Amino acid sequence: MNAALLYALAAAGANVLGGLVITTHSRGGRTTQRLLIAFGAGFMLAVALLAMLPHTLREGGANAAVTVLVGYLLVHLTQHVLTPHFHFGEETHHVGHWTGVSALLGLLLHTFFDGVAIASGFRVGSTLGFLVFIAILLHKIPEGVTVASVMLASGNTRRMALGGTAALGVATVLGVLVTDQLGALQRHGLALSAGVTLYVAASNLMPEVQQERSRSSAIMVFVGAACFLLAWWMLGGEA
Image (cartoon, rainbow, N blue to C red; front, side):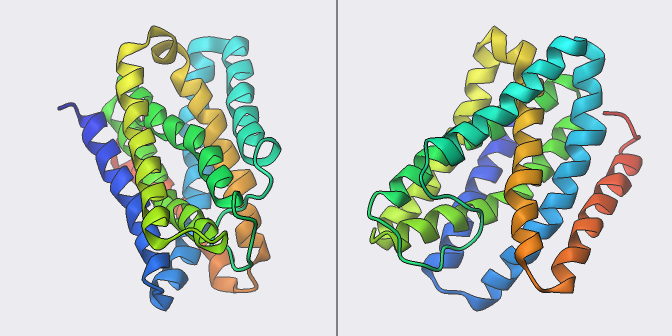
């Protein structure tokens, strides 16, 4: 079993863990996931802008930049055009019955590209692969929280909510497996994933941080970016 697949399995487990945070009503877990959202936003922004984008543009130039934009817009399409109600973090209001299912469907493409990102990163090198994995892992628990909470708020059972988080994990693993077999993803997967990563960090996670009145959440964004820089330096500073 290759390294990318092992890391994808670990990330998939974090999706389910996020679901358990909500379905077991853990207050401490909910506080932790708010801080993880902020930390993950900073770390993911740094990974996308300082590691993924430079390699993508160096290898593909202007065409790669278009592919990055396509990745960004694909997530917007699935989460905010095709899905009637979506935001990262816990859903605290009752929503329509099909809202939970549509939110799950909207996230499946995103989580598929989580796997594509891990596989594409490791195709470049172990440093980039590991940093991309950490970025993805950091938002996997909040991602599980998002799906589980919106499914519960739309009247689905706890079992269905946990099943939804498991489906996200399966999509991540499939992203690795399909990338290993599909030449187009091997060529363009990192660029698409860079766009997806930018969207998740800037358009999903950062708005959640900005809605928080906690200064600790705001500070954790800087901590996340600083931790990326430290890890990048410790691993040799090469994406």
